[in-house]
Length: 593
Image (cartoon, rainbow, N blue to C red; front, side, top):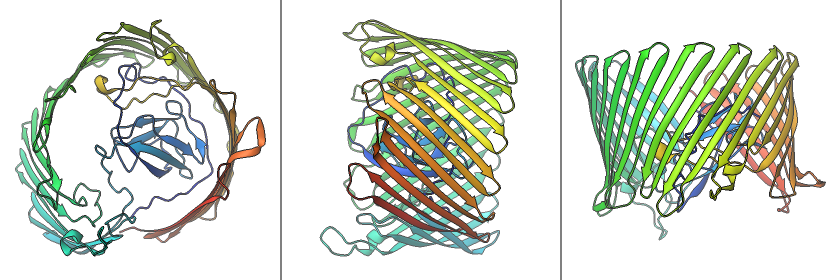
């Protein structure tokens, strides 16, 4: 079992900015969500940049607020967000003794809870053999309206042959909240059943199915099975003709479990993959989504792609994406061609051209990028991107972006990196961000193996969401009109770790400057026991006597053998707008089976 703990730790470094993919974020405005709700997650570091999954997908682009140990992070400079899948990737490794706090908004109509979410699953195999298994399951949930805090169940698995299996689970909520009128929920709303199975037909075929029905008081299992208050049906078949062709047909249906009159959503899909040789691969995906009883809700999507590698030094990719929304004006289409030429390890040339169309709007885009690595300690990147937008009844708009970035490591303990991006837009372009240039710089110094000093500077840093490969759905590149400077120092001596730093940011549309000071302490008593403490203060740089907010954090983790882990954490936040501090504490016990 794995728990997410609000554990704050001892490292807060500002990531370096590298040249992003040249044009994917410069094409069209992303969709605007009419109704959103907010969620918040805490991701524990694992010494990698991620990606780290959020509890919900379909995040509203630009709505997120990300901080590491209380220090705010900038999108495009410190991290990137994949809004569709709900994942965050940092530009630098997130240390194992650090925690990132992510607050965001999502569309409740389109978003789906990711696996796990806020649930605490438990599974114990009572009997297991080559022919089957018997399991006990439990699922703890945070209290919600009309839902219990605990779901228990019994599962049975059967393997009639080496290529076939069937699994069934029965769930029950022994403690469920009352209905709106105060009466207790009936038994059928506190129970659930799921059945799934698969069977192989030699090496060329695989058939699978899944059915689940759950009452409103049950918790989502997070594995695509049980979903509270819903009934779902999944069917799929996969066929493999030799080594060159693979086809998969799928059908999925979801509807309310206790309301036969409620509309149901259906999805039918066909996926084909053709690999005639090791240098060419083609794929096609066709899907249709419907809501029963609403003809105008049907949406059909087609995605085609071809990838060819004429030689070891060249690769060419072509894609097409089309959406046909029946009865609405939501049709769109996008086509793109990309080529990558790598004569040797020191140089790489990439070109990209594409066109996207939506109702009343056509966007044509071209870009070229060059990467040079004359030495292992020196890297250069340069690029030029062009965009032309034609919208019905409006003047044609154009934008060109020239960018350059470099990273140098002249000594083993010293690293420099920086980037510059210049924009030239049409005089009639209403977006003032298109007229601004941006630049970033970073220096990293490690005079001793246990001392690490980092300084950063950013002017008009990009706030770009490169979440969509489909050009028709990519968000417009925008800038943050501010200047940001930061410095941080980290040192570690044996089991003791100390870090501290200061960050200054000032927007060009205001005279106020915000200064953030942070300090962190980490103490490792043993491989199983750790203690963390942190302090963070945000204040007006011109009036440091009155902090905007002050936060104190403390955390403790201890491994109880190989099976159990205990974590305790607490946080106190005092802002200028509140009379008393806001306290938050949590205790978590993890069990591994």
